[in-house]
Length: 214
Image 1 (cartoon, rainbow, N blue to C red):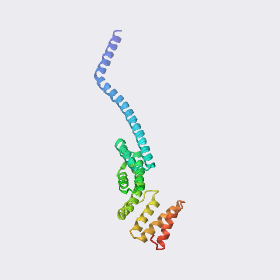
Image 2 (cartoon, rainbow, N blue to C red; image 1 turned 90 degrees about the vertical axis):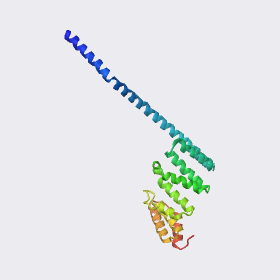
Image 3 (cartoon, rainbow, N blue to C red; image 1 turned 120 degrees about the horizontal axis):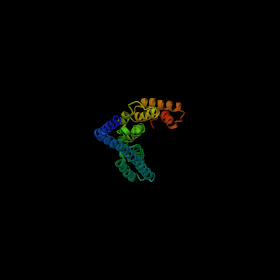
Image 4 (cartoon, rainbow, N blue to C red; image 1 turned 180 degrees about the vertical axis):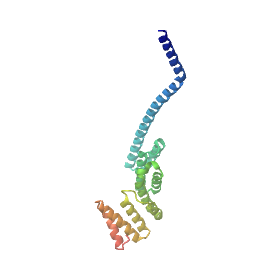
């Protein structure tokens, strides 16, 4: 019996000593664990709120553009960038606004938006379309050499025909007709292989082949 009491007393002392020694670490561990849980939930809630806010701004931008109000759309877009940063919604809104600027004949702000998208690594999925649209804007401003340089790199998968056609257009404007016809032919072959019916491209190629630069 004495041995049993001694064992229980010794075990109790060991437990109390263990708690005394390790309780600060246990408390810190619990704080970190609960802090991590609440921090993660806060991050999730913040991210969800940012997505909802971005969606609201995107709707505002597109609605303004639908009403032919590019100036107010630009204000909404800048507020969107300031509030949520560069997100997928921001990129899509930028593409819409740039198209609105082009339609309004305002090429400089459209060019800047496309360049901003191309400089943003988070919007890589938009790069091919943004690059092609920027090429068109540069061509419209007479910047044919820069437009051609934008197409020097290999076309992204799925954009080979559009790449070749855009290159053909820029080459034609520079008076490099043989190279233009070659690029247009490549574009035509690719589109036909994809089951498309590129009538305008065929018209351009026929006109170039007949020696009619118009």
